[in-house]
Length: 201
Image 1 (cartoon, rainbow, N blue to C red):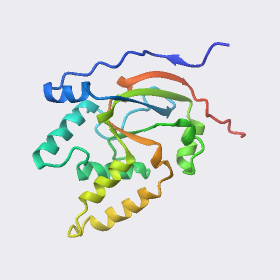
Image 2 (spheres, helix red, strand yellow):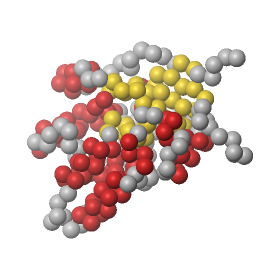
Image 3 (spheres, rainbow, N blue to C red):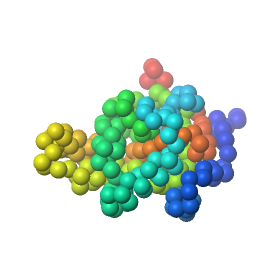
Image 4 (cartoon, helix red, strand yellow):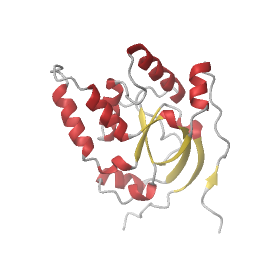
């Protein structure tokens, strides 16, 4: 029986030219292989900033860091908040796309919504992306903690609630956020979703 897997290229994606300093950082970085459950080919776009490439975001974040003196492992506070709310399911105003390290774990997650995605999606895609384009949940959580300001009465209570909520998120260990509107540029393979369940199950 023919395999359901359709390999669509194994070459490392070509990185767009973004200037020597930034392109050197990304081209010299390691790559990480992540997976995404989806139904249609174009179900990989963020709800916001879908026309901004991942490399542009890396460049902009590096510029922000250099202008304010933040360490590179700390994300800008506004972006960290967006990432945190994305992980809590508020994706309508998010520039991120959710990927996972281990799709098998998502299929049995304690998170009902995450499990439903893994059990109902038609396809499972593989993406090989530069590490700087990926936001791990623990780094998002620590960035919010470092950036909180007790004197910021407009946001402090919400930031504390978000941190507590993220600490209890079942998918925290396996979810990875891709910041960019071009995750399809890093797609290296696709296959029928092996974790899909029939509606009668």
